[in-house]
Length: 297
Ligand SMILES: C[S@@+](CC[C@H](N)C(=O)[O-])C[C@H]1O[C@@H](n2cnc3c(N)ncnc32)[C@H](O)[C@@H]1O
Image (cartoon, rainbow, N blue to C red; front, side):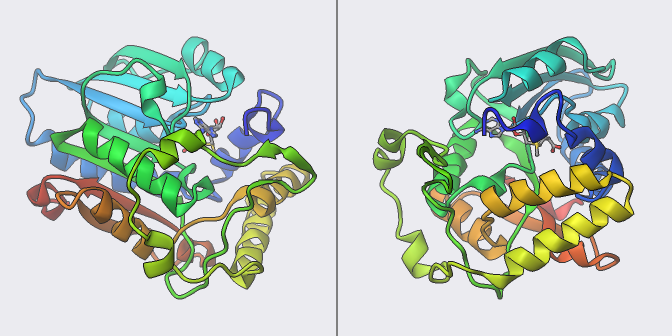
């Protein structure tokens, strides 16, 4: 993942975002409503701590959400594994003025403790990275989030999900052309160090090595990128990335895994509608220890 061109300064990810093929605009609209509800529970002069996991070079989704609240005061921490992205975000990205403090860390978003963090965060965001994780890795991340999330806080996850009624296809262990390049997101010792529930066997479908929905999804995304003017070259490189690396869990799996990680977590799923066939695959689960908060947007 670290050296992938799509996410380097020569890549085309900013065109993917601009094209809105992955519904960044909908994320911003719907996420802003979540944050509005959250802010109702905080004092007006309180600093709101924000953690952005796999932030990328241009963390537009979360920062645009925050820019809707110019009178509020935010402290922003971003984590990205790619030094190019960290450098751009730190030195060139134009953060809104209500973000008074920024810290961008080069580290692993799946193990946020790899960065030096505050004790907890009011808003944790992950955009378009969860789909790389196996259920066990998502479980580990969910436990980290449960520890880092403040009692009235919220975790917002805009991502790609396998339709609930489609078979699970498990991510390969390594790059298909290079056995030495592991696809694992966490050190084996971290995964081995936690008592995992039997999520894969009990709740997830059997591994289906050739799930057809993955092909439908990647073809739809490829066509959308072309239709929405990201360019053929960009559509092709995104298609290649998705085919090789994206093995998303379903929204049902997401809820199951987060509940197993911490039974006090409540989950609400936000869908973006039915206006586009890709909307069947992309959604925004919202997680909070406060059930009341989830009832307020
Ligand atoms: C698809 S972009 C998402 C950017 C942004 N969050 C968004 O919603 O548009 C994925 C980003 O995740 C970063 N990334 C991939 N694996 C990571 C990891 N294990 N830890 C931190 N960042 C990672 C990549 O470097 C890239 O910048």
